[in-house]
Amino acid sequence: MEEIRMNDQTDNNITNPKTTDIRGSRSKIALRSVFILFTAVVLLLSILFIKPLKEVYAGKTKNSMTVSKTEFKYGEPILITAEGSGKDWVGLYKPDGKSSLLWVYIDPSNGGIGSGEEFDILSYGIINDGSEYVDIVPGNYILRLMPDDTSDLSLAIETISITVSSEKYEPEAKSTLFESAVYEPAGGGFGGGTLKIKLKETGSAAAVLPYWADNNGILDGYTPLPKIKIKNGSASCTFPASMIIPDGVTQMRLYTLDKRGKRSDDYYSIDLPENCGFKMPEGKPVEFQVISDIHITNNDAHIHDVHFGAVMKEISAVSPGSIGIFIVGDMANTGNEAEYIQMKRIYDNAGKLPPLFMAIGNHDLYNGSAEDQNRLFLKYAVLPDGKNPESPHYDFWLKGFHFVFLGNDQLVRGVDTTLSENTLKWLKNTLDERRDGKRPIFLFIHQSLYDTVAGSLPGQNWNGVANDAEFRDVIFRYPEIVMFNGHSHWTMDSERNIWHEDDKPYIFNTASTAYLWTSYNIVTGENLDGSQGYYIYLYDDKIIVRGRDFERGQWIPAAQYCLTGFKNWTDGRSANNTRSVIIAAVIAIGLTLAISATIIVIALKRRKRV
Image 1: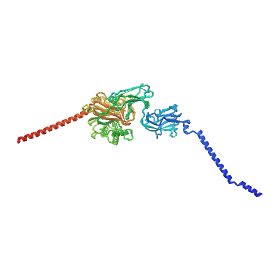
Image 2: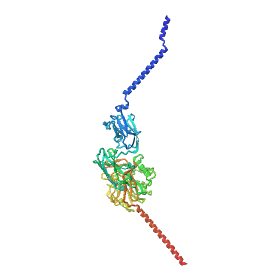
Image 3: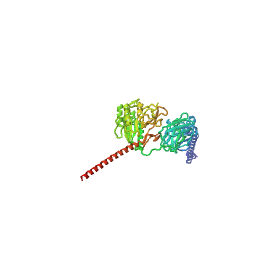
Image 4: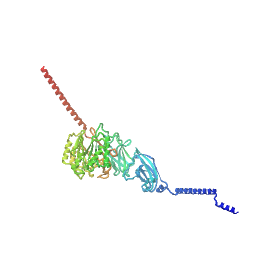
């Protein structure tokens, strides 16, 4: 019995292997169930209670953005519909851009168009860098819907890629703002005349911006015509008589500009007479370029030096037959010789170019005494034969044309010049040299003649020649003079870029390749980025002057001129050639007769002897 009890105790303390396996499996199942249940609860809580970070920023669970399409023409409205509130916003970015080019809030309380309302980001967008205008050029872009004023791109609620093609967008002509516009060009290819505009309402419009256009739209290769201020619902502009209309133009298109410089989508069209464009003369012209105020700094990265290099490369490429590049002063920004050396280095590296012919400017006199600075200038000024002139007042003949340069006898206020009595006498004698009244005489002087071209007008404070009455008295006797001055940097879109009266010289403002100046807002002017100059073409009896925007690589339509009244100076050269031929023929005939007479005399003597 006792043995049996002992066996019972042993049985109670010994674990059955099968029982252990069953209990272990049940424990594992229980743990897995708990884990699965915990995970499910966490996921459920995440879905129900933990909103995505983007939606927390947005302040709601639904934000969206759509765009009318993803491919746009250049200038076409980019129409967006976005939903949001608070400080949610939409931005237009370059693909690799960290900051938006344009942006706009959605909520009207923050200046937005309204949640769910369609808007054009080109019209309503705010420019991120504070500029007046940003050009959305052809290329790829990204639209982003951003939450609660954040600029962290990783938090973008929605992203849409779009493309802007190079094809121009041309909306249908409308006249919602314009009541009427009248412009009648002078005819014969000349654009002289007055443009008169009346608007129904001005709204946000501050100016009118005209363009030349053909049947395909705005004329390629040209900048706009000068913008015209709107005053009391009207605007007007009188174009100079010498201005020419580019060949192929069929209409003038008028847009409005708001105070930020943003151009309207709609426009008013003025149909022009058939074949109103100027036909360029036939034949190969003599050509050269005139630029001014290059202000070299001896710094490769400086915009002045960069601009000059670009100008030289363009001339090398498009005008291989040029006889010279004429610079109307201010070559050296501080008058330092290193700047002349830099100018020559940039010139030498630009390709095959004609010589640089220079007039001295006030900046070229700033680094020492007048005597030393004049000597430095003459070291780098050249004549067509490669020699240096002996004085800052000099002249030469090239291709049958007379080129005359004036310097500074004394600076006034550090900017204006005085021409001495001796210089004015020299000028008159020089202008009389081989004069026939038919050929143009090209005169280059840095400073302007008071109250002629832009920069010299009353109140603009760049009067130029201090003894202007004496200078005027000399040059006004020579209506064949074509004079170029620099100094003021006034843009070629300015009022009175050209000055001319009957039986008086033609005078041109030459702007600058370094930077520009404009009196559009302030009479004394303000800085404007840019680089401008002229291409000159000499035909039989006329001169074509073409203003060029070197920075944009386009022609300036308000600075395209045809100068007339020279009567065909090639006739004079032909007459000279004819005269030479006649003289040579007379000499040849005389020699022939003399030889013949000698032979006859000898023959008669021999006969007598016989």
